[in-house]
Image (cartoon, one colour):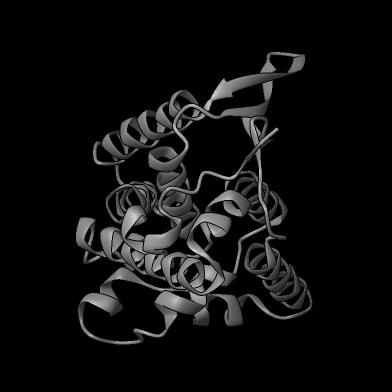
Length: 220
């Protein structure tokens, strides 16, 4: 399933920050394509290094680099599906702080889960998971236009965000449990996804200005 957009709501203001994040990730990815793999590894974060107090800046830099076309396209599609409405509710400055904080929380969750891991971690998915968590508690009943693959059959349907994000959560949870039963040389940082989602759920309302907490956007 690939979420595309909120069917029931549209932002009042243009999502400047969300657009900037997507543009920044895209530009950096283009630079990755013309650069070397060594530079990608250099700016990725390694749990064992973070747990030993080294290279803390990579927690931030890793949020803006990706491992391939499907990685960045998937992340940016998810961000565009959920980010504009949350940016509208929080405001641009608070949303920026929330996004970066969510990414940091997600990375630390991955470090806590496996502090001795030497596998480089990269990507925006932890921060985007925080945005999804915020969307879940802010607009649980909004329907999300979703691209669904059923074998060779592809369709677009409307799924309430509480169900869509709930299914995503259980996929991450079961995948993380499965990861503990085998030795991994790499793959997906499921614990970062869960940590980001949890951060978003717990802190989303704290990032809403008081005079906008009753705001819920424009219904379509």
